[in-house]
Image (cartoon, rainbow, N blue to C red; front, side, top):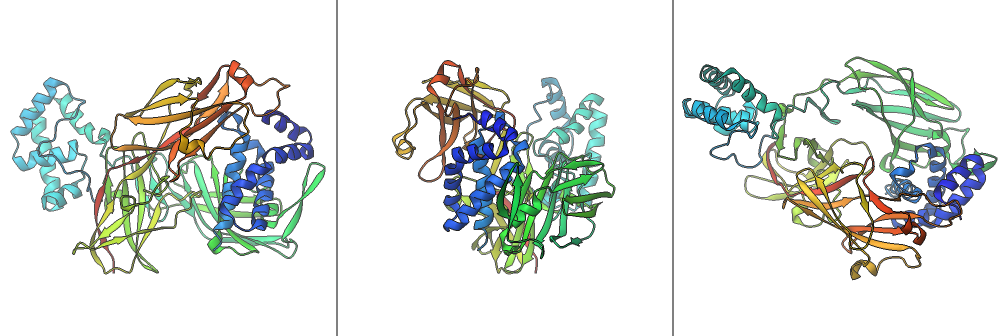
Length: 583
């Protein structure tokens, strides 16, 4: 049996034989992944066929250094299975200390000078300056906290700064004025909010959205483009794809010298691309919306990445298929200042809330505000391996203390949604407190770190603000060992992790890649190396299952953090946001 590299080489040389070899090796894996989500055997079979068809047309995107071929196929299968299955601040973080310390960036003498100067101001002026420059609060937040008019706060802030200028050296004043931009609680890195889309974090670009709906059709099918958002280097397009009289439910697709039956949507999407600025881009992700789809018409989102950033002017683009062309225009969107909304920010990140009305009552849109080192998951608290329990729910608390739990809605697990929508049912208008127990965070692992694999090996990875302690063992915990598949003949290791340095962070998951200093011999048959995520009975992340062929153990085996490897953690940092539910 060939290695993955040999199978891929065979695929390019002889597509029919290459696909046969890959399907023979990974057909069982793909079937098992699909069967976890789908109950109907026919649906599972269709999912398996569509997975391998999608793999063939996207095979150029596979990067072996980022993971195994089996893992890539499993991810495709999971997404296809989910598509089928789906048919049916205000500043309210920690309380402000009575005496905020001067920032650590100042020297001891400057700290003393600054404290003496602040002490010579009126107590209220000094408090306003501390709240703004040491805590990163906006003038609106300070006005609300001190129960003062907004204009009064602005005037006192300016007057206090002017007095400091007369008392301090110029360099120290400039350092003070720079604190807001560097403060971990500052909102200056968020340059605008586009409700229904997301938060702009790029000062060099702006949101661009679809100027108007467009529609094209011919005998093979039709495409209606109803929504598009260009955010940074990422463009998401929402389309309704329908088959025409010239397209059957199952169509023949030619692969090399062979013909395979595929679903009509894969047939119509096989050559989809975006034409923009003289360049062509292939979709990096396709997400189905089963709730708006039928057997003959599919709602889906096409995601394109690696685009130039929008520069504040209209752009003409075109969605290209082999059978149809769909020109459209993207216009610059009018963004709103984040200070117009309720938000909460902490050291590692935060969330912005927009309450609104929906068909079922009250809804709250929650937009993630990432920190310097962490990105906040758009699901806010979703994505955890074990989200059950009161501490993993969002609640609205009314004036009488009544609690109303939220239900997550409007976030696609695999889509490009930049925010999540939470439904709270039919509530009376008025002021409520939104309780958020914490945030799901992701961060990039240190790049190109290699950990030798040997029984008893220990390693510490330095993460943002914490340390990840790794332990490699030849023994698996009994609770995990009982669920492992048997029959492997290689050397197998269990890798456990412990997050140290921060009690408010809990590790929820990570991935590493397995490799060797020397490649597998051409004559080698079987799996050379693999690395799989393990979960416990409750579905929580338990560690990694790493396996090497016996021959690979003499080729210096290792684990590595390659490009794109991230870790996920739960940040236990409650937010209490006062929001006004509209009538």
